[in-house]
Length: 234
Image 1 (tube, rainbow, N blue to C red):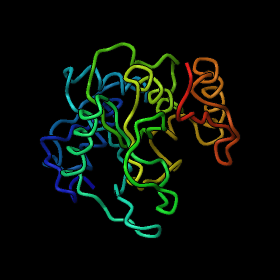
Image 2: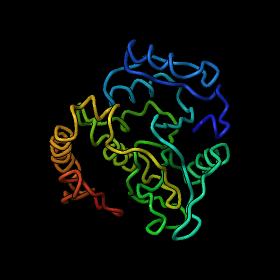
Image 3: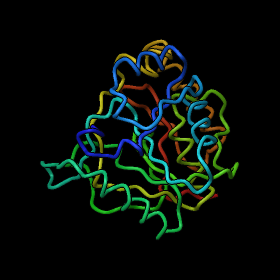
């Protein structure tokens, strides 16, 4: 996708969990497609913390999972159009700076019928697969739940909301990816059933730590989820 989009390779760093992954990625991805291939840490939360510490404070960072096929914008209730990331990403960071915030994301719903126009700054879920943030060593952004690999994006959204007073979500944009498929974090966690158990555990911890910011509700695929309140009270 990044190649098709014409994103300059000098802007693309690939982070892998270990030497074995490094070897696999090097064998598959042409060297001229990216800047650096970096061995970080195993585990999603650990890897994201490694990435945060890898870059300097104030750096604008985009997180893009490697199974994303496209990022698109709503055109109508039935139509979408792939966006130019070289235009959208600077725009997204520009909105953050305008609003005095440091974390942005796009809609969790990929169906244009349910997508709305514009962006919001209240507490709305920033999905982990594709987002951006202005790097900071402020510890208030750090996750409080240990080994949180199934709900880290929910807690991260809350941490940024608490620290900054809001998060930017572009509600007319979304991405297409393969959810809960083989490989990646799904395989690492031991498959769908184990993932469901971990989601339930993380949801319980979220409710304990952030009861003012969301509610536990049933979910058809995941069993239960922690749904955020758009305007929570402290």
